[in-house]
Image (tube, rainbow, N blue to C red; front, side, top):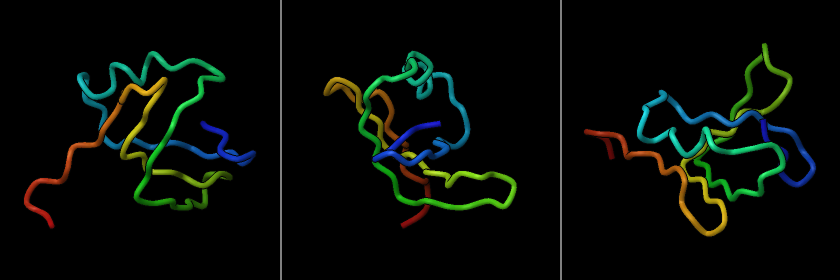
Length: 73
């Protein structure tokens, strides 16, 4: 969960890989981060919008960057 400009969102980062997610696990409550996303979606079973994270930065350090899709455009 994340609060962005006073609104609550669920953050989604795709399939969990040990290397990519290691630094995301270090995040704590009230950490200030920068999130870049390619989409926001809604699911009927969740009461919050879902943000698909592509990039996360904390203290000017990139802690997550989504790998580009293989074989796509």
